[in-house]
Length: 465
Image 1 (cartoon, rainbow, N blue to C red):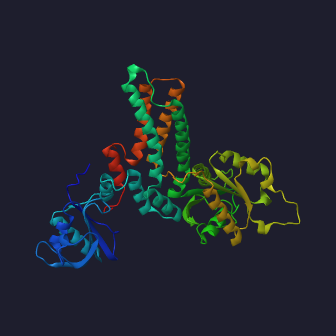
Image 2: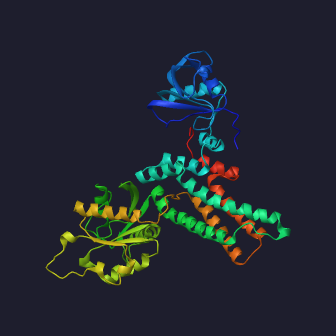
Image 3: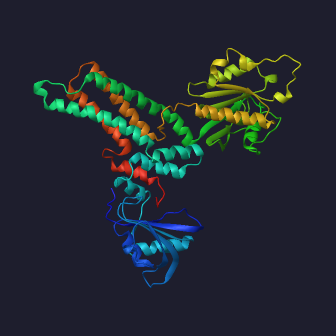
């Protein structure tokens, strides 16, 4: 753990040239160090949460480095919970580095990655899950990711966990009390009431675990594989979705030999589209490798858009592919493409309505990639599939560390339930209760968290945050 007695400093704005850049200092000497290089008012004599214009000068020869505006935050009324100063200067990387050097020469030390937020956590300004949400908020690249990170940073997830932990602590205290009076053979904890509480905890924690599927696709993006026979129109669909030529389109079968990937934001959700090689038996070595890669991409996808042309595709061919790709968590949307080329004077096969295929589908549609209305309809279907993912709880889990801790908590809660059903003694129940409390508390940092874990969490932050 980094001692908070030292004052740290760092450039808090992104690298590169900008109109304004900010140097942030935090620690017991933040104002004194700034006063030493600031020509203007005496900052130590000014009230907290005030802004002052002046000049930053070199501590070596008093030469002017930049004209700046200085914001001061005294006591614990700051982001970090300790004395903080923010120096806003011109956004030249050279100028900002010179100001930072002046701060360091006057007694500050360079901050490490995430150290400002780590201090906010250590000073009780936020819990550990809220601190991690800060990093997610900085990295948010879609409306949904922004809203999720903001809700967690404001304590939406923490509040839910606190309520769960409080219920466990109440019963744990009564069990511990029973242990103190073991010789009198008395029970302070109502077993029936606690069993009901455990059932409720199990339900809520399972909902949080289930919400990870939704939270993770928001954070990382929804992987969408486009698959089908050669010349089904997969590359044309990719180009139509992005409204640009991402992939080569040709009447020659097998044009796409490798996967083509790109990110598209639809209604605030991030989708990662993957155009794959056409699925067919082939003696061409290169094309065969492309087909195997296509199957691997489908295996990693959350949504599969399976395209076919009714004019040259049978129900058996579609069914064979869907069976090979099917897994419980995969969302399959069947797309009959090239409807603009169909001869409607002839009877249609209507593969989408075939009873053998229906069990594999989450959606189906007919389309022409040349018609923008069809593309917009597909985008609406994709958005709806994401919104239908399990996330009944307002609190959404999108962090793998939190997921692992919740699963461990659930494991011990189930062991407590089994122990109660077997009428185990209070000391044996207490052990599992303590472990459940530990894993639940490790998410928010309400128990002592290993310094290596903290190092991993805050090491992912940018310097200056």
